Length: 285
Image 1 (spheres, rainbow, N blue to C red):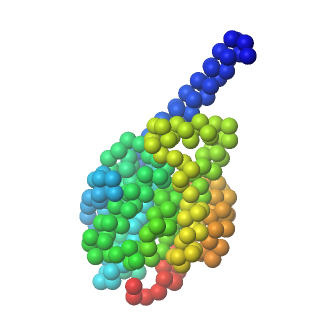
Image 2: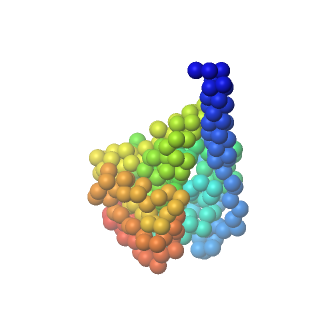
Image 3: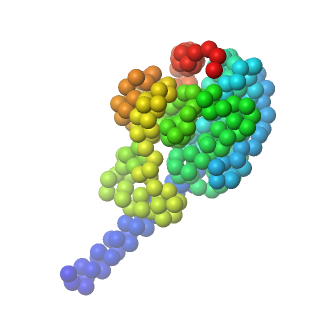
C-alpha cells in the first residue's frame, strides 16, 4: 500500500475511533430530571432514605410504608429520569392499594444520586442489588419483593432478578440485549467502535447486558414476569419485547398499539392490568 493509502487509512481509523468515543461520552452522561412530583400527589406518606449500592454509592430513594404484610416493591426508572418521573409514580396507588411497601430509587447519575455516567443497565445492577439489600435490612426478604422497572430500569431489574430469588418482575419498555439496541440506534458499522469505547471509557461491556437471556432464567426458576411495551416505541423498538417474550412465552404480555416509549401508564386499563398481575401472585407471602 502506498504512503497516501496508509495515511488515508489512518485518518479514517482515527475518525472512526474519535466518533465512537464522542458518542459514548455524550450518551453516557444523562440529563438530570427536574420534577416537582412525589408520592404526596396520591396522598401517600413517604420519606427520604439512603440506599447503598453494591459498590458503595449512597443513592437517594423514597420509602412509602405499606400495610402489615411483609411485601414490597422496588421501582426503578429509566434513562434521563428519576424516582419522581411521571411514568413511575402512577404505579404507586396500585401497590399501596394492595398493601405493598414501596422503595423508589434514583439510579446512579440520576435524580439526587451521585455519579456522572450511566452504563445503560450494566453497573446499574449494583444499584438495584443495593435496593434489595436495604429492603432485606428492613424486614423484606428478596422472596417478598416485586422488581418493577421502566426502559433501562426494566433491563436492569430483569438482569438482577435472574440471579436473585425475587417474587416477581414487571418490565415496561425494556431492551432485549444492549448490543442489539445499540446496533439499532447507531448501526452495525459503528457498533464495534462504540462497544470498544464503552469498555475502555466506562469499563462496561455492552455484550454483558442481555435481559432476554435473563428472562429465560426467570422462566426456568418459575418467577412470574409481566411484560408491557408500546408498539409505537421509537426509543426501544417493540421487537425488543418480542425477543424477550420468546424466551419466556408464558409471561403476562401486554402490547399497546399506538403507544410510544414508557407510556402504558396513560392507558385507562393500566391500573387494572397491573393490579391483576399482582393479585395473581397469591395472598400471604
